[in-house]
Image (cartoon, rainbow, N blue to C red; front, top):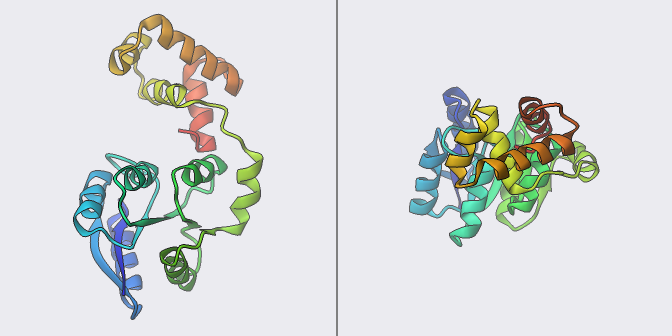
Length: 200
């Protein structure tokens, strides 16, 4: 029996996924979570074989969960099922140790098959995303991502500096570098471009 934790912030979709996968004779849904922190608690409590998760959720993302699985040494393999076919997300997912990445419009039989393959240690990536992922290198480093996420929230350079424990000058340098790398004229445009590419 393959034990699953499901993480999805849309309640109706979470219920549909649980019902769909629960009909499979060799799959057992041991927990459902509608946000990142609840999913992390379920992972630590149940130590499932596979986590099926969306990318963007309240509290922390599916990518954050994948990194936590690796950091905590959990035996869980991660399968992302999302509407976001952005190449930046796929690249970051692969870097975080995600074993599977499917789009939500995939047929239901494909999802169950992907769960089994991921549980067996295989990698399952939506074919249409692979070429895009290899053509789209993420130009940002982790600190630039952090400052752009906070800039996206409308925080000033001083507020960003305080939040990250940086000097205002260093923060402005990170914002400037990120904007230059993305060909943006200001921090808000840089954050928008990075978000659209899946780099945030």
